[in-house]
Image (cartoon, rainbow, N blue to C red; front, side, top):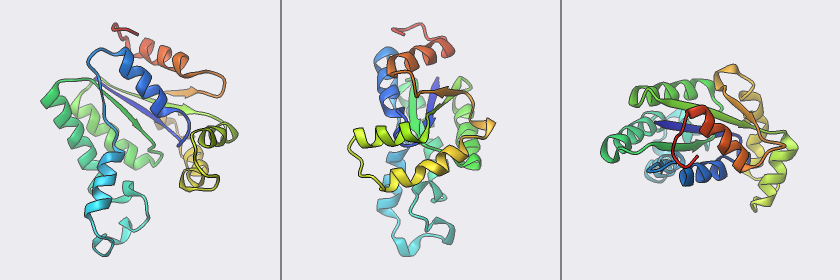
Length: 179
């Protein structure tokens, strides 16, 4: 099983993913940002293709197929369920990765955590982000992107906490473990 936890920076993806990790026996965390960081570190700026020079590693052509391939290798090698927190609001990128994950494991679930801009900004500040930094700058893009129905299933998080979100996800995926 692959459980994608999507949403804007600061909405609570990592907290929810870590809670699910505690509840789902034998699951492992796979953060696609690690693939992006690797690519950013090994591809020199002067080698990047024109469309890759955006400052966002998701725009690197290799990021999408490598993210799916790493998920495939993790599932095949370790046989564990994957919990995948990620911010992916570009509809085409999402469809590529979600479709790839479905090929890796047909039991792939996607949840998009949502919140008001004010809530997201409060949470970013609470976790130590500096107002106006890159995460703050992405909020409007994320909120606009996540208006598309392709990102369902939405979970509004303004008024509920991590445990309630994890409870809901466990119910939706039919988890029989500790959930």
